[in-house]
Image (cartoon, rainbow, N blue to C red; front, side, top):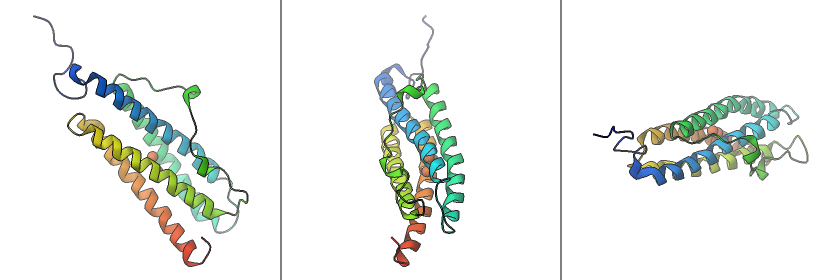
Amino acid sequence: MATQISPRHGILSDDLRSEREELIGMLIKAYWMEIETVVSYTANSINPDGVRAQEIIESLEEDIQEELGHARRFGERIKELYGVVPGSLDFQPEQSYLQPPEEQTDIVHVIKGVIEAELGAIEHYNGIIEFCEGKDPVTQDMVTEILHDEEGHRRLFEGFLREYKLEGLA
Ligand SMILES: [Fe+2]
Ligand SMILES: [Fe+2]
């Protein structure tokens, strides 16, 4: 009798091999989104000038740690699914909206950029969660937790933007 190598059910089964490869692709994209967010939030937590910038700087400093943690979790899941975490030469930046503004006192630019980055993550992670339905509850749970963090980040920065809008600054 042949020894059973792969599980019969779920994402590690032979039947779901091509779905597993597709999922790894989605997780790699998520990994890069997190890494790029770390890069963008680092710059935007250093560049801003002015009294009003302090709140944003502190908030981004906290987020950087969380986003790095997310990147790590995505990377570890990629490995568990028999994928390989890519090297830096594969990196393709996309966050045009989080580049440094002309004026470093332009906090609204930073706030809007963060909201857009979080929105992009929310969209992609919802897609992963849907894809995992009935195939991979472990990845689905993990990404659901990460999605919760991103929704919190987005809500926080929407609150900042609301304040600027009230004062006619956004
Ligand atoms: Fe994240
Ligand atoms: Fe986030």
